[in-house]
Every structure is written in structure tokens, then in C-alpha cells.
Image (cartoon, rainbow over all chains, first blue to last red; front, side, top):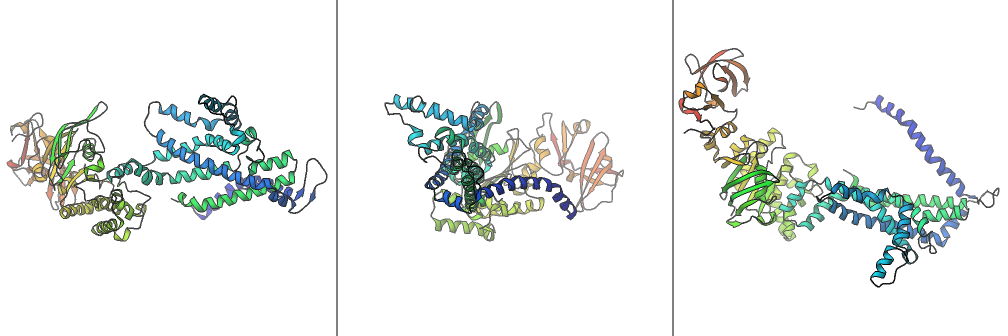
Amino acid sequence: MATTHSRTAARFMISPSVLLLLGWMIVPLSMTIWFSFQSYNLLSPGTEEWIGFLNYEFFLTDPAFFAALSNTLLLVLGVLVITIIGGTLLALLLDQPVFGQGVVRILVIAPFFVMPTVSALVWKNMFMNPVNGLFAHAAKAMGLEPFDFLAHAPLFSVTLIVAWQWLPFATLILLTALQSLDQDQLEAAEMDGAGPFSRFIYIVVPHLSRAITVVILIQTIFLLSIFAEILVTTNGGPGYASTNITYLVYAQSLLQFDVGGGSAGGIIAVILANIVAFFLMRMIGKNLEA
Amino acid sequence: MGSIVLKQVTKRFGDVEVIPPLDLSIVEGEFVVFVGPSGCGKSTLLRLIAGLEDVTSGTVEINGQDATTARPAARGLAMVFQTYALYPHMSVRKNIAFPLKMAGLDQAEIDRKVNGAAQVLNLTDYLDRRPGQLSGGQRQRVAIGRAIVREPMAFLFDEPLSNLDAALRVNMRLEISELHQKLATTMIYVTHDQVEAMTMADKIVVLRDGYIEQVGSPLELYNSPANLFVAGFIGSPKMNFIEGAEASKHGAHTIGVRPEHLVITQDAGMWQGTVGVAEHLGSDTFLHVAVDGVGTLTVRAPGELALRHGDAITVTVPGDKIYRFDRDGSAVR
């Protein structure tokens, strides 16, 4: 029973935290916007001046920008596809009653607890290294030429590493969704003559759609800003082959010391993220409605 | 079409024997009700017939053919679940059409059958809604619709009315009975409610701890219960049981008297007692009468009675309405 009084009181009570969060967001954002209109390079201090949209012009016409844009989208899309398909299959597997279920589940979640730099280094040195890596050994054992993943398929390799990290998250969310599926529905479908595959397509997948939506939305937020894995493994290279927008902004502002250009890139990244979010919500947002 | 025979069927879950060896035959077109208290194995028995559980030993024959290892879908049975088990993401139309779609029928045929079923069940206006937008009774009808479109050899109902409120339950009870008259298909119905069993069944199977206590028509069970359990389970209010000296007079260990067979007499009678609680229902009056040496008897008197707490009355029962049971609870005939 919310009366007018209690609603006013509630607004009053939550106002400090709202104001704090607003300030937390608005200060860095307005500073970034301010810097993005400045000629501001750390190598020539004291020469800052207003240059209008020049930073944006440079950033948007840089050939690296389009490479980074498509890399960002490919990375997000690739990881989403792998984690959702792999996560669904893993969740189906983990839902089966097996001996040592608890231990197996913890093992599956484990990659999520490894910090990105560490897991990227492990993959780089222990799996993908063309001389000492496990994949190289496996290739040699089968009489094949070892494949230098990070040099010849850099974006694919980064996608693989990031997908490995996010697979547990997707698995976990999908597993809990799977466990909330009413067994009666599956039995009813079985009585109705649906085989295992039909039951999966017509009953399980629709039931999972909401969880899949949550996974897509949350992962997209984090995957748009993948950075550590790229820095540790490929440094965005060779060329711009594995540079995404986040890494490009980093390179602009901290390798070339161009704070103005970096800020402009940051603002563009914000706008891109919003465009992605808009289309995502249009496409799958309806799944979240009860 | 639609006869079901169970031969020496057992079911164990680990070390627990839920169904001890059990024989049962169900004739085509019968309305059979499995009734018993919670945990008596009636739902398990239904699931064994449906094929949702595998029997531990014994055989299940449907239409004279061994169906013990047949998949649920291959048995030609349709089931209505207690929770309805509707597919929440599909419209009512798609829910009802699902078994037909799985059977690979063409769209025109599916539409024809779905519309037919919807007409029978008064669902035509709701075909495009989702199950979540329907009331309990409507959902129940959708679940039944999904069962009847398949034209199964037998319907299995697993406590289908227990999630409905009392008034709706009476309605749906009638609708299911009418459906049975119309389709004349075998129906097996599980319930813990003896009123549902008595009103709907052609044949009642009373179960306790997996054992069949008695099989018979509702009135057979009412008039000649095989033992104390059946006598106490069938009939409402519950039968009065009297032990000791009073029972010995009739040559039994226990005697049973139904509340509706006790007659209130003014002066001379069998038992004299004082009225405890009197429940006035209008159509009937239930009196709880304390009788010395006998215990508390429930008396059902028709109509309104001006009897109150503490009044002294005398009750009598006709000699042929006394049920006699021996020491281990079996009826003495």
C-alpha cells in the first residue's frame, strides 16, 4: 500500500544514492567530452586549445577505425555464438544426474574465476605457442605443421580465449534455467509423441529463451570492452588484425599520448555501445517481458 | 480398443517397493478411478500404465498386446496432468495442435481437429490466447483438449481437479463425466477425493500402500466394503467404528455404522447419549453424540433439527445396516 506520503518519502530517501551515482557518471563523461574537443597531447603540454570536431574527424577517417569496428563486432558475435551454443549443450550435460555432480559443476565454473590476463597468458604460452604449445605438440604428433594461432588467426584466437572465459557464465545461467523447467511439460510432450530432439526444440529452447536473452545482454556489455586479452596476447596486431575499439582508444591515448583523440574515440565507443544496445533490445528485449 | 491389463506388475524405487505384485484388468470404455490416501501409489500406477515410469517386473498389456517396454507415445494413451503441463510459450491452438504436429498430420487436418476439440470444450474464443491468460478451469479444458485431439485408446487423468476451487471442481467433474458419455473411451482417473470417485466411476480401485484393497462399483464399495480401510474411506462423513463389548454382541471384533443409517428415536433405542457438537448444514444436521461404552458417534440427520449441545438423545440403527469386521479388519459376511 503505497500512499502519496510514503512515495514522496521513498524518493527523498533514495535521492542521495541517485545523486551520487549521477555525479559518478556525469563528471568523467563531461570531462571526456570536453577533452575530445581539445587538441591535447601529453608530449606537448601547455598547448591545449579548442579544435572543434577535428579529433572526431581524424578518428573516424582513420583506416584503423573501421578495422577496429568490425573486429569489435566480430569478437562480440563470435563469443556470443560459441558461449550460447556451447553453454546450452554443457548445461544439458550437467543437468544429467552423474556421480560427483557437485565437483564437476565447480570445475566447469572455474574458468570464470581466472583473471583475464592470466587466462590469456596461459592460452598464449601453454596452448597456442607454435613451439612449446599443446596444440603445436598435438599437430606434430599427428605429423602436421604447427599452426601459429596468434600470428595467423589473431582475432579467432582472441575470440577463443574470451569464449573460454565466458562459457561458464552462460552455462551457469542456462543450467539454472534448465532446472526450473517443469518436468510435467517434458513428460506431457513425451506423451504427445515428441522425441528427444523435438522436445528440445519445442519445449526446452523456448523455455531457455529468457535466460539466453539475459546472457546475450550481459555478455555484450562486457565483450564490447574486451581489452586485457588483446594486450597480453597480440597487442592488437599483426597490423590492426586484432584491434578492437577499446584497444584503439588505448593506443591513441596512451601509446601516442593523444588524449584528445583518445577521448573522441571513447565518446564514439559510447555511442556505438548505445546503438548496439538499442538494436539488441529491439530484437530480443520482448523475451524479458513476463 | 482400450482394454488395459496389468499382470504381476511391481515397481521399486531403490529399496522401496512402491507397488507390490499387482493384477488389474480394465475393460474397454470403463471409467476407472484409482482412489486412496496420499502416497498409496495410485499416481505411480498411472505413470506405469502411461509408460512414464518403467515397471520393475510384470507386464502391461494394452489392447491385448504387450506394451511393457513400449515408449509412452507408442501406447496410444493421452494424459492430463495435475499441473495441466501446458506449454506456456504456445497459444491454446498450438498447445492442442502439438500432438498432431508431432504425429506429422497436414495443416488442414490439424486445423479441423483443433477446431472440433475447441468446440466440444467451449474454447473457440480462447484459441489465440496463451495459457497464462486463462483461468484454472479453462487451462484444465485446454489440457483435456490436447488429450482428446489424439483420439487415444484411453485417457489418463492424474488428479486433474485438485488445483481448482470447490465450485469449479463440481462443474469440471460433470464435464468430464459428460465427455466420457460422449466419447465412450476408457478413462483412468486418479484422485484422493472419495466424492469424485463415487460420483464419476464405473469401477473404483481402492489402493493402500500399493496394495489393491478392493475393486468394485461405487455402490458395491459403499454397501459391502471388504475391510475396515475401504469402509472408512468410502462415505462422508466417515463410518463410525465401535469395538469391544458392543461389537461382541453382534459377533464381531469391530462393527461399523454409517452416520446416515443412525436414526434418532424419541424414547427406546439402542444407544443413549448426549449431543456434543451439532453441525447445521440446512439440508442435513451432523451430530456428534457421546455414548457411554461406545464412544463418539457421528449421526447424520436429514433436515433441520432443534438439537443443541448437551441435549440427550437416543439413536438406533437397523440390524441390516451394521457392518461387521473380524480381528484383522476383514468384513464378516
